[in-house]
Image (cartoon, rainbow, N blue to C red):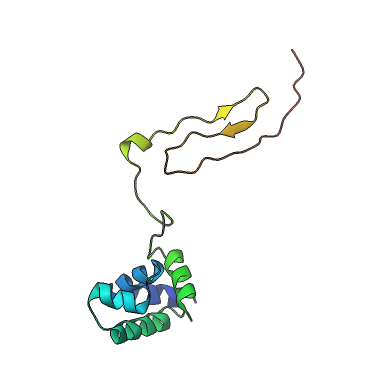
Length: 125
């Protein structure tokens, strides 16, 4: 079955991949038609063909398929973009005296992470 899915993913035309991206972006068929300057019926036909080729039954399943196969990028998910030079180096996490990681310093567009480490009792030497 994996071979079928791989063949299906490569069988999409450039236009179909473009439509998958717009579907993943949340556009309706009418909005896609307007954006691509084609008729809504043409979009309907493309989506029907895409659902058949990808063996997905609806738009949600199609978006999941597209994310799984790396066909779309949504909000930095499944993206292979390199960080900007000023974001390339991240600061080390700050650690308090009890060996608890309190926060990592990250660029503004990345989430901070809070992790609590297991405290160990250490006998003085």
